[in-house]
Image (cartoon, rainbow, N blue to C red):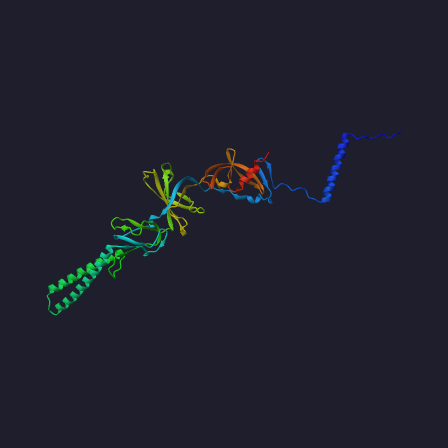
Length: 386
């Protein structure tokens, strides 16, 4: 019987081709000894969920921090300026009329009590030292006359009336001498010789924060013009301009936090010690002050910045760094660490945000861990979810 020829169908041909391809692939893997392809370092497993492998370069771009309970919140942010503490500031004027011959210090210099600030040429100095010299000479002459008159009286040569007159003259001369001596001491003048040089000296230790004196300038003793301002800068005032709408929030004892570009890495905290009773007629603002410790002079006077008024927080609010927040649609989200390498996007409600710290009133609980650096990277990964 003739054998029947078996003709493979199209299905048989396809199955045979797959088997041959599978054998070829398997033999190639065995012969080359290569490993299966690596898993992607980051992957989106669900909408709003991102996984980052610990060995991924992206992992090193992330910073995760624990959410802290909120103990205070900012109720107002107001313009403020660091100014000298007037309780420890002395404005120095000249007690004599004259002309400034030379300056010994400049603004910003540290000075000690008694240190020369400026030298003046003054007729008042000449008058004071001259009066002292004449008064001293007159007193010495009256003392000698009294000694002689006492001796004459004891030897019955002069009358008692002459002795009493000599005592009166000596007493008047002594009083005049003491007056002129007190005057020269008050001016800080030497008592040894007559001179027209007057040295204006620092009355306290501190820093020269202002200087209006200039060489050659004429100064007067009767106009109270301040030539120098010297302040101890281990403490300064924070002067806050408070508009009318915020006056109800400001009171003595209220806490504030001051930040300035002049010290970008520092935050200065204090309590308000004074609130003015009247508004400035031009700006329609009241002035509030707080004393801030300033060891080392890190806070420079006249530095401007912002003062945040703080109140104690009540409830379950938490605080997070502002950089942790990401805008998603019309809302705000953060990325919560659900487990190591697994991050979940979560919507939150922001109550206050001062640009550094944000207060979250809903969506987070204290103790949870969120991404504070790299949240934008995770947002981009999450947006790739199907």
